[in-house]
Image (cartoon, rainbow, N blue to C red; front, side, top):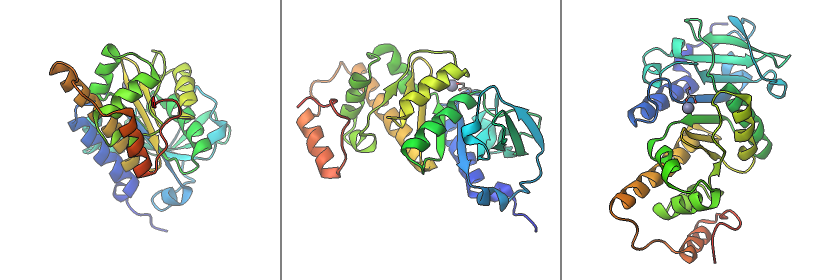
Length: 274
Ligand code: 2HA
Ligand code: ZN
């Protein structure tokens, strides 16, 4: 059976467009940022011969829980800037091998490249999110500028940081009522940072990596990008508010509660002071 061109696949197009968009927003300098997108076998099989493994790549992490699962991922050391012009080198479609110790490359990473260096954090986050939301498909990491900056100037405490973000734009509470999780500073690319991120992903779709960036997770590209974009916008407003001399007034907790009621969302327990 002839296969369709994978460049035309909606998942490839989404990866190309979102990476270009994020680069333009200034969040993903050089090789900063990475994305993994869970695909179904049917989606992949429409474009690729799933029996044809191009290359087997060993993995330093036990991926048994994801055995047989397919992902399209950004490549290690690859620049978001370049994905749109050369997706076959900068992206890869992989399957986690049955032993959970290897990745089977089915397409892409054509210069011999590897999947993102942050694969442990991505895979552990997928495992965690799928437990709370079986429809979760995307994990995204980026160096969103104002959120990153806030990790230097704002208390690194989940309740305090969440409240500040909620207060900066009225819609924030509606977009991420569960708030934002924060992990300690840890070395990127390690299983340790993967475990810390995944532990937070049981409760949050947004997890801050202090002095580094943010992780987002969700069902589709718009949801995840929208989550990060909204939190980043709040961080940008916070930056301007601080630069203008600090807030003279703000949304009250009662108003946040009224907002949550009107939009039918439940703010994280204990984060509002009523
Ligand atoms: O892929 O962003 O955290 C480069 C990074 C590592
Ligand atoms: Zn990073």
